[in-house]
Image (cartoon, rainbow, N blue to C red):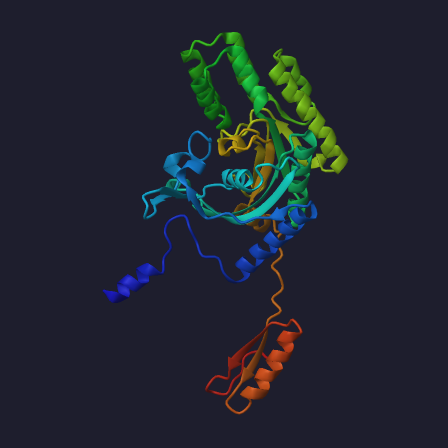
Length: 383
């Protein structure tokens, strides 16, 4: 019975895993490459708690659905959650410590996030994320900086083949306004379109009695993906100011990205809509071979800080490190860091001299492990 219990204890719950040895060393090396890149752009490190009050990730803020949160209570009876994503935490932090600042604020961070998804989806429930947030800057140049940082971070990590797909929430919302859709219909429609479920979207619009001309316009949004040329086509579809401004914004962004020299990694997709409701303008995702999910997600969220009492524009992104590692391995773009650990063996008679030698090597920055000689006199590999 005791043996059986111990065997059970060595297993992890569904959706989490141990990472060790060469794999973990590689993951840390990739994180270090990205971290250096973010620091080069002037982003300063910040660490927020692993769990927060439930209201930080509430439905009103538009983050992860409540059923996918890991919830628990503290001794005072407050409902707490393990963070499902970083952006609301960053917004809370900025509102708390930088309430009166009006100059741009640059944060970067790394840590694990927790989402209680169904085990049938086969996704990890705990993943490592690294990201950056730029607050108090509502410019298109800020968005260009973010997307350029994504491209340069992925290149620094060793990834060569990837595409950053850019959308604009305002384009879609402008058409919804024009069609007179209520908030609930817009939300449901966005769910269908973001899931590429065109039949579901069509059925919804018919059921709500939306005129064919507007229905066709809303469904046509999914056709606009590809190079910068699709923006001209998308502009020709609409006549409302909100959607037209969104296209102008994307055209300006493309110009900024050309200045950065990263335009070859960029495409546009006006049917791309995020599950996070807090995004207000430009949104983007990075895709690559060997991974079904986007390895980077980001966008503009100009109203989110307002929930915490600070009215300020903001834009940010997050890299899902676990998915990036999978992509690097599947594309054979991953090189395991060289392990330069040395071994020194010792016995009872030479322990002091071996220890002294090890101390000297460590002072010079060498990794050294002291290993006792085996009883049969054979030795491990020596330095």
